Figure: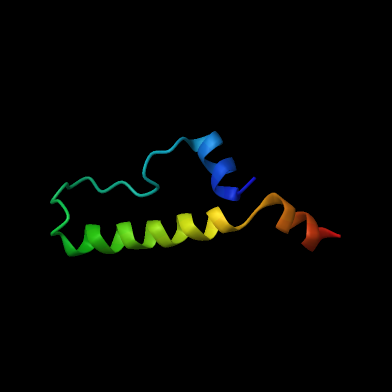
Length: 57
């Protein structure tokens, strides 16, 4: 089970960052935020509870 699975089970699957202005994909700030969110989701997707258990032992 990945950390992303745990986060989504607790928080849901909504975007982690919420911009109050919806300027669309052409907005450079929104584009950077979405790119960062994708990188963070990939990181959490690749980290598992088994990985954590190995570090604790």
